[in-house]
Length: 508
Image (cartoon, rainbow, N blue to C red):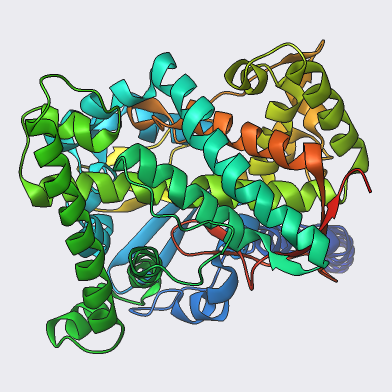
């Protein structure tokens, strides 16, 4: 019995050992596969390392020059198109490219997400309490008054007088001279000057003449405005607001330069406001349709408040349309078939339509602009601040005071939304049976969405289409770049180093 039991035990032991070895052989590879899968998933999301107190400071600094592209790569690699960035001590930002989250932030729970103190503090010296730097009743009042500026009558007048005048008397002659001299010109700079003149006429009823055949290098107001934009935007790139606030308190470095630039912009604006007040006092009815006249006629005469409003609109109108057009002409230069189709459309519409109706009916050109802004949005990232705790539709927890940024640049690169060919410039994706098919504003928030959707959206499209038609009818724009330009941002997107081009007369 003892021998039998011992033999049985030995057999059981051998069997158990064999089974264990077999299970190890089977389970080990499976475990390794699971671990590798998790590692691969972690790697594929490209989430930045975060350290106590410092957060992801080192990775952020490393990617400072390509912050938009870097965060786009991260957010598009995550399963729910959302991730949490530990930016600096106590500062966490939810970055999302999820349309459901964007709709929640900008519309469904709009009252819980405001500009917030982080954003407003950074821009307050420059924009004050203007429409793009305010919330609540202050924002609502400005929007209501400004909305009258964007009715059909005003839009028609804008295209047929302001834009056409700037186009025929300034932009076309400058390009014609560049073509005749075989000169290389910075088309980005030219388009910024063009947009600056246009928006000043709309906002102030004033023509700065920044773009003229003599092409002056500097105009104090415009140069100061550019400096104020650049230095204000740098505040957002600071590791912590405390750094720029200390420099501001001691009036040194970049904050001293910003103070000088802002004072120059605001002093000039106030001169215009005083002149406009006198003009309105001498008239029995409102004849001007510029924003300044409308706000002064609404009963508000506080110079600081009116200055805030007008500067905000100049900022919006100057940078966004010129940025969109710059990248549009770059893309067009490499897609001859798109340029040919736009030229065909221009030829067909210009024969029977007024300037306003011509650009309004340019469907293919409209689609081409939308496609260009999908790849290179003028405002690549925008944000809000939570007033109270919340949970986004994808389950992301947002705490009170936390910033939430939605990412139009990344949203234009989501494969499941735009298809495997998302990287291609293909205007046809916006067309169906020859008709333009718009995208959900929360999938394509280039003009924001919800209650704060851009008032100037239609005006911007009309201006861009008129410029495209006017330029392409006469010229070819040929880039002098050996590689793809670098997409950079301050408050809006730009080409690093400008956009050098040669202009060729089309009839030659």
